[in-house]
Length: 258
Image 1: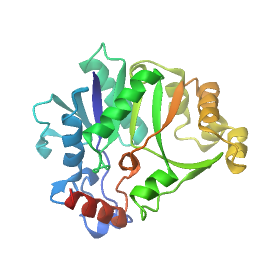
Image 2: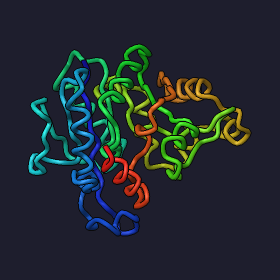
Image 3: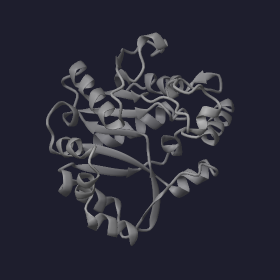
Image 4: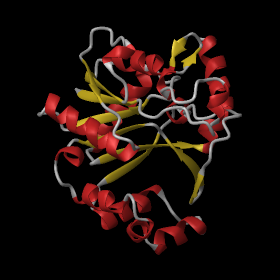
């Protein structure tokens, strides 16, 4: 069993295309798509999983009337950034379930995911036994499912990928002073420190398209002492987040046809 964190922090900004269909300043997670709020689509998929123990929502409150269908539901305040929200959610999970080793992070803006997709990620992560299990979606997988997604892809050796929005990490990354967390915390507001963490060699590998998932994991281990497993996810929905108006339309049409 595992606890699941739903990342629902962040509000609609004036310069976002979603501002065309939503009130600026309102939580993005509460945007209605196909008759249901975006976070509710995600919450329904998470709550139906028999692999999930507790659900922690970061960025919303009890006043938002979320329905977890009887599964224990907890709330954590928005801490202002993705990095801090992941840490806060992970810490809350550790307090709720001290014996759990892993916790899942699921973004609230992937309303097309299903319980089966989440369970696939949880099962893969349990077998991998790494500190960070990070999902990637191949370009052909994404474009076969969503031809007009217009996602930005990173060019690796022999493949192009984008990041997924269901990722699983070891609870100690949030509950103890792990070297990776310590280094990333120190660098999060300093561009020079961030560049030093990444280094020149990874940039060269990316530019020359010689970077592989395995090499990326190796570099993370060397640079920040983080044992990472990059895994190709066969479910495009895991990486199809709703950030722009046209992506909202893709999600709306897909969900209305369920």
